[in-house]
Length: 287
Image (cartoon, rainbow, N blue to C red; front, side):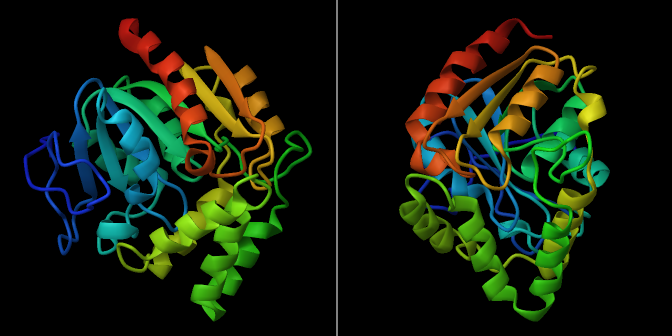
């Protein structure tokens, strides 16, 4: 189905009411919920594991006056909990490309895998802003700056036995190390169930993607500019991995937030926006 935004009111009161908003897709199990707000050049935002588009509220508050933001709830998450779109790279990217206009994409953590895959497949992606995300999340002999391969499998096992406790431990890992860890963790705990519980099947699919995906080979051939925003204190996606990815990418740029952890757009939103404001306007001449 082609992209078509509309003027329905926003379901999330933290987001500005101006601009246009796509339909609330609760109960429609064939689609993804995408909320559109703001005005200006389009920017698609993809969240990380177990969260939803609402987590980007600090960026919405700072960017919606000059960008049209398309906030996605990935399949199985948020208002897309009952979507029947598989949380696989091909199926999810197909749906995203069909539902969004030509735009730059900003992606956090797991969301970065979908953004990279989309940019490798379609000129509809005009640029990438990767926030605490990497083409490969697990360690190997030629990719040392990553977590052990057992980490995500263990989270999958734990999820089957203790759903709520496992989510809480993962959120703690998201914020651990950040100089604003306590406030960031409070925000994530508030947000994680704000749109309902994420589907257990989608959580398992997401963990498999984090464990098994390796998109490094696509970086040199991906003909769009990219910005890689790392938190120096990130314990899940080390800054060295993001620097290496930026150096492998076509026209890659690297920004490191010294006090940031895995969710720098929460505790260091102004610094993230500064980096975006320096990068996104340069995409105007991109094909």
